[in-house]
Figure (cartoon, one colour):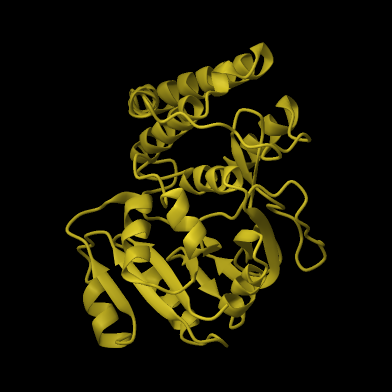
Length: 311
């Protein structure tokens, strides 16, 4: 497939974005970079105009969130391949070429790259996998690199930080769901693409460094509320509480525990407030969980272990 748009959503991440764009300027294949600037007030647009004049910047009037920013960036392009990169990712020179290559298979609708942690000795993620409650986890997180041999077994789809999509598949699915401001949009899109019959695969040679974003703030109260909203939205959208007593009980127990813990430690109502908002937002957005989307190896205990490791 020829023609690649690389879309980068950003919000007040000028310093992170600069490194990302510098790495994209060294790629081995031609591509068109589009930055979706969610109303930044840190001089992001000026940086792009001054230092990266070939980059197309979509200057938005406000922060539309991850989904909203990406959708507007995608709309600016027209290439058959859309590569999505976070502003805190520095791509190796072959990244764009290798992550787009699997889309030559007409059955493949989405591809994950391999992100490494700073120092390149540990894997950050090789796509996502989810349990029966749709809690999603980065695959191979913390595994040694390059010793670990990654695979596509139980791969749900790519994380939004390093992904490639077939444009026509993305358009048919309706793009990212803007009712989620941030978090889990990549999980939701992967589920919808799978439901539409598209395959997910990986490109282990499409490597990059994930520096770790500070856009919203790790475990900030705003992050807790936004993440809670997305979690409740997904539970209702995909009817998780109707997937049997065991799954429903599992989901309710974990969400209750997390909400209580966040409320006590944060001394505010960010966690329940977010979940209430997300549940209300999901009214009328019902979808089904496609066959093969759940990793059967992620039982209750393993999911709790993964959750603790992520935190």
